[in-house]
Amino acid sequence: KMIFLDLDGTLLDDHKNLPKENREAIDAALNMGHKVLVCTGRPLSSAIKLLPMFGLDKPGCYAITFNGGLIYDAGAKCAIYQKTLPLDLVKHVFEKAYEFENIHIQTYTDHHVICEYDTKEGRDYSRKTRTDRKVVHDIFEELNGQEPCKMLAIAFDTDRRQIAAFRDFM
Image 1 (cartoon, helix red, strand yellow):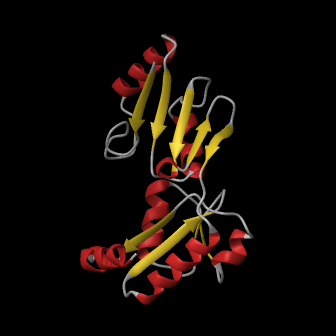
Image 2 (image 1 turned 45 degrees about the vertical axis):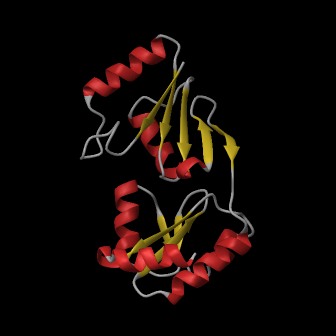
């Protein structure tokens, strides 16, 4: 049997801590031979930091990261599935995002969130997900030919109209 758990707002409390009851339930499931899969939109680098803190870095534990773009076997410490985005698509989406006002756009390397502009939204995202962030001159130079698993667009100051217009445009 497998148990799929979302991180933020489900497994973790509002302070990003694992309540004792949840940890006990996970331990009981693992002791019964069940698999525990943590599901998150977060990048792998963030999940890898959290798994040991919550005792989820042993055989039978997995992390589905990047909204399903990568599955990580926490016991074996390796990716077992990865779906990436073609670089020409990434380039297109970044170019279009820059045409809109008040949109922060970012993507990911194996170890960092990367973006070309330092924004409050980018800083907040990295803080909340405990992910290292790099502001770079050229996203594609930083990616160095590696296709990312995910891109993320965030509206400044919760301007939902801008992000909706961008989504509709794409």
